[in-house]
Image (cartoon, rainbow, N blue to C red; front, side, top):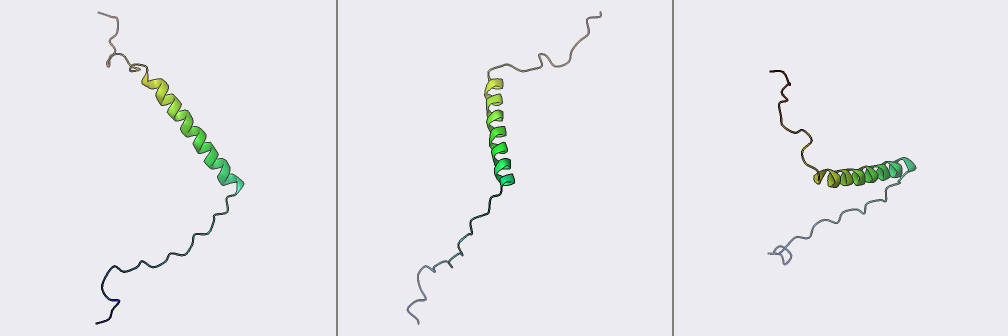
Length: 64
């Protein structure tokens, strides 16, 4: 019986992640995504105050 056998095993150490090289295209793309998300949230908040767009389902013509 060895002394180190029981107990919780330590996880293997993960190698450190290298910092990604962020080029201008990636930075611009991320900025555009943030702007689009802000616009969507504003539109949702604006639309939440209003009622439904279509009034009554099937529209009937005025003819009798």
